[in-house]
Length: 313
Image (cartoon, rainbow, N blue to C red; front, side):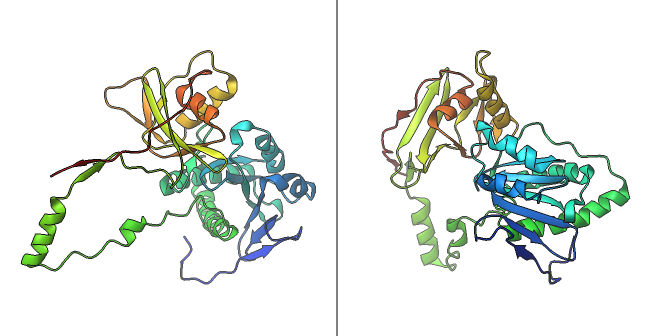
């Protein structure tokens, strides 16, 4: 890994002009480059021939991400842009070699590395198809890839890719007061806090958002609208196996959710899994079909506003 104290220089070039469109991010001292652009700009970017050569890529909206690789990134990204299951994809980040210098082995290796890093970082929910496999590399090739990958991560950061940033500590954690000084008064204050009430069923949704619940064959889930998306909250349940009658698109979404590493077993339950993160879907209907693995799972019904129950110590 590069010494983090070593000064570096990243160059951001906008060959098509503008501020928010296509950016080419590179460093004259390394082999990797990053192409960053809104996925809606793909036709204009592809027409320039700038995406020539193999590469790994990240598609994301800042909340969900898909990581892939291709010998022809422009063509593969066009396939994703037309895929309703990739409706979350707003921004594309393509890691390739200077003047298309990457070969297929680097692209495959970088897809594997980026996927594992995204899972370890946990900054976004990861939508996965087939799990990438670690390629067999010689020690010499692996050490070369290590150096290029280190540079690529820095360029992705400078390009604004949010997928590999460690989330900041929670505000409550960051602002947690120091423990009170020892002494009788501190002990009394501690006793008062220890004897405070519990509050059950407090709301965790954004202020002003209406919350909805879904029940289907024993499954329970809750969610809420956020912008143009519908978020299924952490703790909601997902059926382990979809119905045989579901359409191909719902089956694909369900498989992607199962392969994303965001579900955990429920002790004593065999037909359902539990979400450990919140997941954003394009619509409430798609969220219901995917979680229930069914074509007609029922409707999300409004939940009564949280009515906190206070339990005395």
